[in-house]
Length: 155
Image (tube, rainbow, N blue to C red; front, side, top):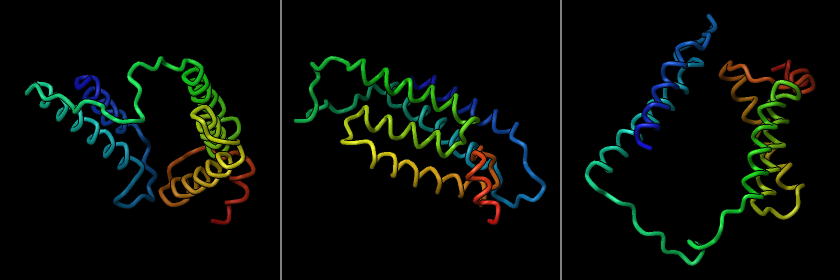
């Protein structure tokens, strides 16, 4: 696992070099966050490798909420997997905010949220705020969909 984490972090760092930087960017451009995340993932992989090498083990999971004998709920795993796949397929069609809203609500429902309205509202608000920050403030291209891009053209 430590090697996989380090390899993933290295991939993120190397792949971030391919991100196009617009000429109008200042010190914090679109490569900053992928470099930061990649560096944190590499550091986590290295730290995990050191702990495993030393023979460290995590504490036993002792909690009243944990049932080690409970079987895997394949229904929830399947619903969440379909939600992520649908997100990947819908992101360019309906825009990033709506795709994230649908994924958030579906995952929340699969994990036991009561009702669907509150997860839809929470996912919608969070995704629109994140989209506005990334697209309008950081100049990172995330597809917004026709309506959201039209509504935010004045930013």
